[in-house]
Image 1: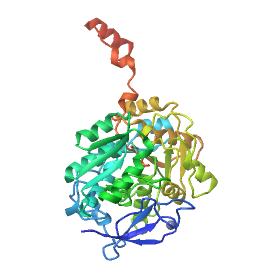
Image 2: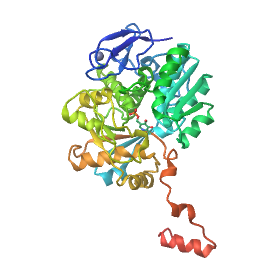
Image 3: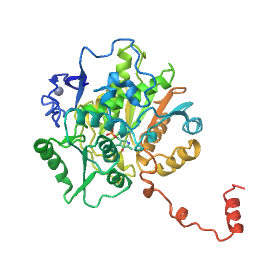
Image 4: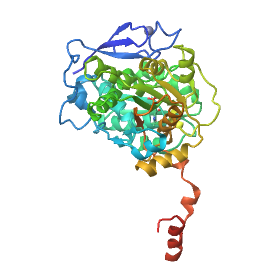
Length: 418
Ligand SMILES: Cc1ncc(COP(=O)(O)O)c(C=O)c1O
Ligand SMILES: [Zn+2]
């Protein structure tokens, strides 16, 4: 069963009926001033009422929140995504000066990133709407995740990329049977997807028009469940801050919607302030200037956090940050690998470099006393450190070979292990 009656503009709130052919450039009325994504509007008759329970028991995936998602459990293509662990991180918290630090470990998802929350909803809806092919422009986590859910749904999946791209996530997409299509000219990726959406009815989940507004609104609904889970896992205790690594802000916008749903339903009194850990600073600039139009920034350096390396984020992200009274923190490469190792060594969580950026942002906000003493903070670790290990494995680790027990023991003594 489909629960969607239409879409509304995140900025001007105009309603568009559910023809389901989402315009990839977003709200036509806002296009010139600030290109803006749409959000799902649910059917009045099935929209959850105040104080209704948010979750159904005994459903072993985020589909336990199906009442707040675009289709019912019966139509869900699921790999058991969601319901990820919320871990108190006392040791890392102490080192960052945060007494109440938590980690939401999204690397536990079936394809080892938070994108599964998006893909499960997007692919379920694509299938319900009769699409034969799902597609995305992504050589990263989004492509790998979409490929897995497409396999599960028996849909074809095309991951459009560009010549020379490699890496674990692309290999992952291929293993799930996706057609990986590297184009010689990077700029041809979006026009190709545009043509295939129009001519062959492909369900394209990623952005494919400039300027970018974000991904398909149906998939973004899946990210609300991060907020639903956090509220349940915090057991009635209010969260002050929620920090995510941000590229186009799909997850940020979805998480904000999730908290606001619960606040409007009377489940929580207030939503946390959201923080975007970003790379090139387009969100920090839009917030500082008070504009809705996110400007392109120069790529001042090659980021290690490749999954979030955009030079221009979106209105949906600014909107979530502004509405929550939050902040955006640009994160450089400096100290990022050390922070990845600190997280792994203190807490036992190996995160992708993009997913380490929230901790750098938290450290910065704490130093600036924007995060206050005693406030609770959750960092969302969006992807597994196995995804980009090739960037960070040090050569000495690869080469260490010991020829005898004595040599091995000497090494252990040097490392103060024995
Ligand atoms: C590991 C990881 N973290 C965070 C993001 C940010 O995604 P977005 O802000 O577009 O939701 C991405 C995706 O591109 C990612 O792969
Ligand atoms: Zn609008």
